[in-house]
Length: 503
Image 1 (cartoon, helix red, strand yellow):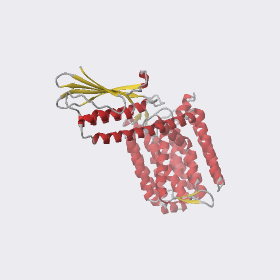
Image 2 (cartoon, one colour; image 1 turned 60 degrees about the vertical axis):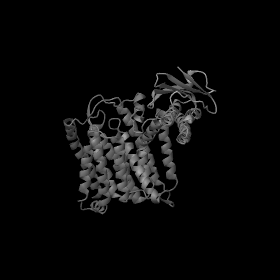
Image 3 (cartoon, helix red, strand yellow; image 1 turned 120 degrees about the horizontal axis):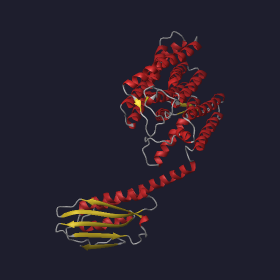
Image 4 (cartoon, helix red, strand yellow; image 1 turned 135 degrees about the horizontal axis):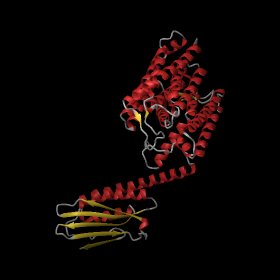
């Protein structure tokens, strides 16, 4: 009877998805919820993009019906009804956020905030990773760390599935394999509720893939990918909560190994390039496969195969309850990393070099910032306006400027130019960056302008940063202590010279 229920859940969800998806396609065209070809798209015609509605409707109908079954599964669902309803309600909230994004567009930070709040609700409801069984004799109690770990896991998996939705059938297929793996583990550990949840999702994805596989007639959109990612992440947490076995997390992690690694490398790549972590690009794993000459269908099938091999290898962890399971997990992760290296989705040596340069640049900017703050305090402590130029020159020296020039147009039409030059300025314009910026004058002066030359010191980013700091400091210094009209500064910095001429 129980096996018949499992089969009925899968087949019923698949049938509903087959029936609901054409209706969703029709509605999408009516409301113009279409994904038009763009610079990042690989399709050439408008495609309906709210197919996730069919996945949600078909799986939700089967999940709700389980509460009314008069058998062991129905009893188990009734006993866990609050956990199931909380999880599903939060997943539906994430679905609503994704649907809003598909129809109207939402900032990435808004979606991230919604995921964070939904994950927090699950933690408060007791659905969190509180303990992990590392071996058969060693169980790790996480304590308060269970909250941030659960939140990071749920948000990470949700966005990994979302970012994998780049080719026809890719996200749906990977999610289907992951649901199958979690269902297998749930059956193995006797968790019938999680088994039914995953079978309902697996069935809906199977029916949806009939329309989503290349050439796709519908996309799941953010409403579908965010819903799937959140539900899979939350379900894996519930599996761990019931069995405490580490394999409850590592199995889904291996099944989602490609999108997880792809997300991590994409975020690292954007960080190193100085772009937003949410910025789009065409350097994902599936894009690299297309650039190697594979067609869409071939690339998707290859990723399916890699996912099946990774998940299948992970199943060997069920046979070991000692450190050997971690060895299996680490070995599969290394193989996945090697695959990313082979297809060119990540260049390890170049990445390490760029990370080191990024860290060195960040350290240098921190030091420059500290120098700026010390100089800013000095400016605010000046009592005599005659000291303003000395302070500006000292700032130029400490921020590695080659020279500075201040042009002031007096009220009588005469121009006054004050110049400071570094004595050890290197020869050649390729060593410096020249910047000009205006400053507000006072009642007795006309327009003023600073012209500065910043030493490159090997990095344009550093020169730009120091130019910005000096301009802010100069603006504050002149605003507070601009000297009287017609009076040339006679002070000089510790090194360098001042030339004041009247034209």
